[in-house]
Amino acid sequence: MDSLLKFVKAYVKSMRLYYAFITGISGWVGVSFYEYVTPVHYSNIQVMPSAEKKLIILTFLFMCWGINQIFNDYMGLAEGRINAPNRPMVTGELNAAASLLLSTVLLAAVSLATYYYLEPLALFPLLTGVGLNFIYEHAKGYGILGNIVYGLTISSCSVFGFLACGPVAHPLFTKERVSILVMMWLLNALMTYFTYFKDYEGDKAAGKRTIIVKYGLEKSKLFGVISSFLPSVTFIAIYMSGCITVPLTPTFWILAILTLFLELWNACLYYVNPGEEKTSYSLATNTRACVCGQTTFIAIYAPQLATLLFLVSYIFIGFLFDLHKNSKE
Image (cartoon, rainbow, N blue to C red; front, side, top):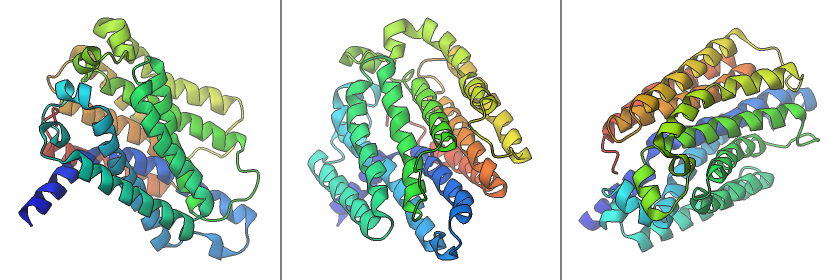
């Protein structure tokens, strides 16, 4: 029994659930959009997802982050021995074979539940996200390709949240939907860019040529400050082009300004201190900036929900990071 409890504890620690708000809120962008557009196409209220169904979707979104972290830890053991020598799988506290088997079983359970209880069509973005996660571990060694793949991986959560809610009127992809997916991709591609700073030494030793390794810390931290404006500039371009026609709420503008502030503040933190010192604080700010950006798009369709999700996420991201101050884990 003791060995089982130790395994469960090590497994949960390896899931790094303080990051799970990334997938959770990204998926909820899709859910909120579905609830906004569905009454326009369907008069039958029964197509709207029940509270139970939405809770299951949210649970799956959070779970899939943690499940995939186990696969990532195994595939990235080489750099993990340098970047995070205290991670359970690196130290041997977490049995690699047993944890991989458990993650495979959990992933299979989520897939079956998605197909039979939620919506069969939602299985495609779910499996696409899992596949991209495996590709990402190799893609991160080739400069910006890693950021591109990571952004696609998380934006697939938005598609999953949308499709898992119920039947979808055609066309499946519209200018507005694609525009929001582009923003989800950009926010998360930028988020993962900053996470590479803490992994600089390990990635360099393992031959992973991320942008940070390729161009060095000095150039990379300057680019980080410049790139912090990218989400705002990109959204303005999309909105001015007429791809998003929904009126923007006051809540949207408040969260948009907060996102810009957090993105810029995050970039300044890494500019001043790109190394190991205060890593946990910088990572928490980085995660909050990304999640704030995602809730901004929920505010287009559900302003009150967006405010609640932002506040809950902001508080619990800080709380969970405080429980894991050791960045080497």
